[in-house]
Amino acid sequence: MPFSTIVDDLAARGWSLQSSFLPSDVTHKLADECRRRHAEGTLAPASVGRGEEQAVREGIRGDHIHWLEAGQAEVCDAYLALMDELRRTLNRELFLGLEEFECHFAFYPPGAFYQTHLDRFRDDDSRCVSAVLYLNPDWQPADGGELRMHFADGSNLDVPPLSGDLLVFLSGDFPHEVLVTRTERLSLTGWFRRRPADVLAL
Ligand code: OGA
Ligand code: MN
Image (cartoon, rainbow, N blue to C red; front, side):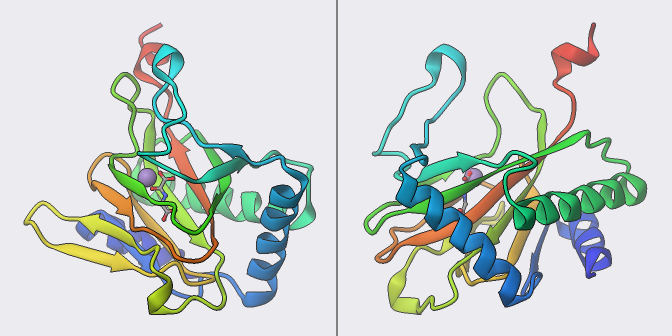
């Protein structure tokens, strides 16, 4: 398990891209789960913001999501267990104090995108590390839908949403966007969270 490169990359530069993090039989099963939920109509349009500011804005993000809950499918439980192992490794090696992992399937229909944003809410900095697993085995450059990372020096990196690849980054440090996709684009997007500051203050 290449956890040690994730740890080293996060410590050195704040992000890590692991190609073929998961084998194709596992990513196929995860993609099937995502498609099954889409076919059942249980994926909901994703919203932006929190609390009273929360709203569905297709002009900002056009994906549909389904939050993972334990006990729904064996392959999802295996992924949650793996991410928990990564969480404990990050805590042990980098003292991040991550308490939980939350993740959702995201389904981008053709034409969808997600404008540049940080994975933090203005009033809640509990999301600490983002982890996106891609689920598109036949992705081609003409399909678009790359994740574009924006770095402080003005440079960019376009990450193709290729099946089995895992992108991990510090949630508050890298503005990023999903470029317009021309085909259906599937991912499993998650966040390792610390306790929100208002809970720690109690
Ligand atoms: C997100 C996000 C990136 C991706 O859901 O916050 O940035 O590549 N997703 O799916
Ligand atoms: Mn994001």
